[in-house]
Image 1: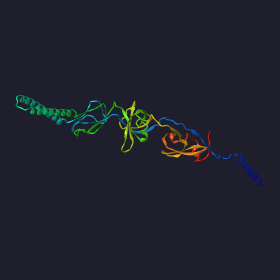
Image 2 (image 1 turned 135 degrees about the vertical axis):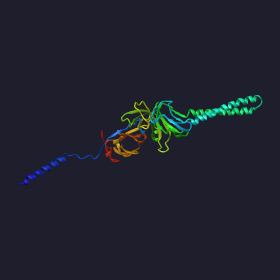
Image 3 (image 1 turned 120 degrees about the horizontal axis):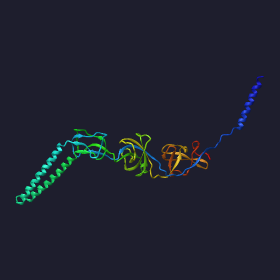
Image 4 (image 1 turned 30 degrees about the vertical axis):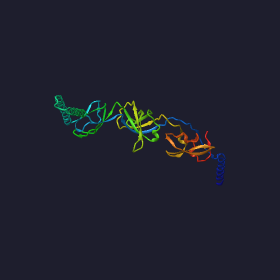
Length: 342
């Protein structure tokens, strides 16, 4: 009596299975992919670089002569005004040199007057008078040098700005021309110094615009323009120096601030934008994509000239045609047939 319910269940399951098998559709044998047409563009591609903020005018100040530093009036970080006295040498030796040179001029002046009288009385030769005149000229020149050194035995600010560094202390013996201060000019403005590779430096020109962001001021951007492009590469890293002058930034910038720049070159070779979903494989030096040919996927390798967030850019000359497989391309194999997604 228990056999009948069991047989009924088996027959019911078999009927359901047969019905399901009749209703199910077979999996497609041809994969699908979308074909997109690429359009060449010359829209500027940004060039990214980073560096440190510097004053446009940094001057190293020193004494004209050597000697002992008698007084230093400023410290690092001080703001100074143009013409302000920053440091002085001990003038004992220099003043003595001025007095010595002045005394020599006075003596030769008296000697010349006396020898001219003697020459008028035929008691001295013309050569004697001329020799004293020559000696007096030399003495006057030495006096001028001594007074000049006396004048430049103190350091004055060449422009209003800030003391970036101080490299000597009071009572220290310094040599002629030894840097004592580095001062930045506040009126000259600030710049960002960066290094560009040879591939990027040929794309930029003087006056090209840029946007700069600072670690010190997150989320705040500053406008800048290229004002200088190096003609020679750095001997160690091989990059070319580029100076970006910052324009109209309302916040204080200090020498040494780290900043990042996004430069928009004014000239750009024509290129194609390839969506990221079209990439099959590759790296930053070379990527592979599929091109449609008689409804088959044909692989092509191209070199990226720029990698963005959702696309890569390739030179217009690197692609043999303007149609490319995007959506679904990752599921295809080279030479495989596909059905185009409309």
